[in-house]
Image (cartoon, rainbow, N blue to C red; front, top):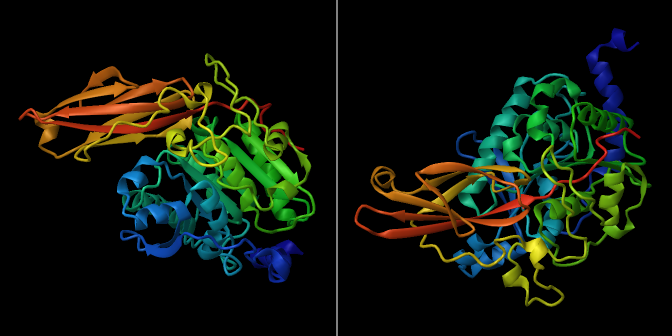
Length: 440
């Protein structure tokens, strides 16, 4: 029957129950609004729109004209890929993340995509022009966000809901240097658009695959196929979980908690619903994440695995600044790493570009100086890491194997003898120890 009716009939078969459930509840945004600022922005090169949410603390510092405070703190960037239009789009994604963004201090960006559409290819089987266009537009949008906000380029947290999973999985697979981790929620997956030859580049990225007991059959089936694909292709840090009772509904709290642990930031208040989530299935890492107990990170050959701090250990971007807040204590030395103290003041004339600024051990870091063009030929450059000299020149690279925060310093001495300084913090995350991605 399906062959006689053609691909359009197949789409109707999948979409009819999807429409019904979305109308009943699934596509509503039950999460409360935040106290930050939501705007729609148009990226100037692609002319593609996106929704940008700046969290409550970010807006407060911005309104106080505290640029030093804005730049001193890391603002992890959540990139959320929306589901099928007209049942979901970029704006509901930005709305559902506001409360979690305020809790953790996340900047949130929701690109407006063209591929996840009721009248487009579904299930996804090819990288068609609309899908490829979404990929390129997303990369430009990310660059625009980094150029116009204080979002952390080295702490980019990808997530998705529903058919947005096609793009989320694909982007991590094709652009692992642009993303720190991935948490997909009741999302689709297509093996046919994934590049297995590129898998080693993201094999140690933390992944969290979330499904619910009463989700659509296709989302559950494709999510299980994602678990199998990552396991077959050697991914080391894959957590998956099935949550009791829920259907095809929004669960940003689960992804937010995962992002907080990976990026090393602690919420400023308890979650509203996370404690009520109950698992009916999952692997050891998924169950550990839900229970708030992270296991040690899996280390590659030649690198010793190290335990991560327990869930009740405070982890703030700047432990010195937050130590005096009620209920928050400074990080112990074993967690802070060598650069937990406040960075020295910089004069703002020069800057440091680091790729990536956050990553899992061992972190292969590339760094370069940003300064007036004529200085690149005439000035002297001196680089330090945690106060120790590591070389000169306009740029360089370094491998960091010790988990924690590290301070990269730059001293530029111009031909006239003027000195200018800049500092950048790099965070090295321990690895999860996992049995790999196994089906359930």
